[in-house]
Image (cartoon, rainbow, N blue to C red; front, side, top):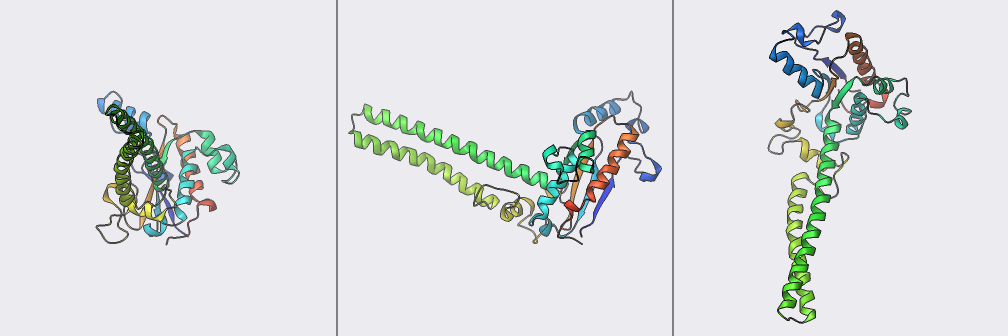
Length: 264
């Protein structure tokens, strides 16, 4: 069973949980200072300092197997955004996922599953948009050529042939860009997190030894043997609310639903 370790980054103090640390920025700087005010604005927008859930295991096995879907489920649970209809299979209303959803103390949870699903959705949206745009351009080219051919007094059959050719040429340009995109991400169909070719092309650096994650995604994949899920609590929570939320996060991480098939 893979080990899931919760590393708490609650402010610069870095104290152990048993010492009841505070994440308040005014323990380090004056609440009237520009630095403090800027920090508070950041926290209000993006949440407080992240709680990092460390997922240990061979990264290729983690992201190229059904484990990635379990991570996606865990991230959804930690975000507090699990639909009520799905809670029955995720610990119920009184389980950690249900309690996090009711507490509404989490600003955002983001990890490998969420990242890859969002990447797949964005590429799919791009393909849909580009397909519609290409079809519109092809239709416009067909109309323009038809008008020009008719103005020259060409026979109707030749007008239709020229219009079809204009449409084909326009669509050929789109298909060329589509092939380039498909090659870049290893696509043979609309991308999903279950598509190993797509995930591999997004996560791993093909110019380096197999299993080496791309350096620009180090905040998600710090090494070939680890992944990170970041959870940010909302700003302004009481210490009691923070402590309770951290406890629920620990409980959620330990749920059997998210037990991974691959790891140490």
